[in-house]
Length: 168
Image (cartoon, rainbow, N blue to C red; front, side):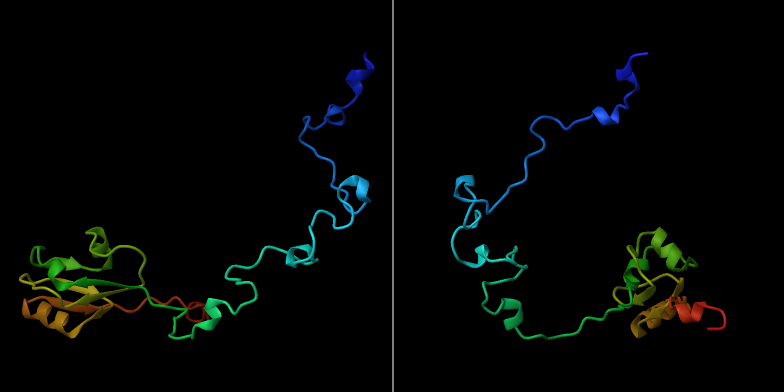
């Protein structure tokens, strides 16, 4: 048996020519080309240790614009995702139709992510419908019941962990 075949293949691997460069050895005398200032030039922020790419919004030491402007407003970290449907969008349906959140989604009247469905009073309604939703505006309730329909309130879906855990 040939001795070269017994040597594992991994030990004979080497990187492709030109793919591995020698480490840059700075500060090794003027003959190296990278002595004294080590390729950093002279003085200034970029020549100092700790120099790095400045953070977004950095303005050279001047007070950044985002810190000069006043803070205002409030953004709720736990917003309720409410899908709204106007009563006018329900007008083309036949009388006696039962509409819940699933049926509204199937008819593409509500889209995207939502926790609650609220019916609003925009538009007119001629047909008597049974509408199930988590909330109704006063004008929507009046229009649905005025057309001979029925309004059913759904219980809000609970998403808090405390309410879901048994004994919690």
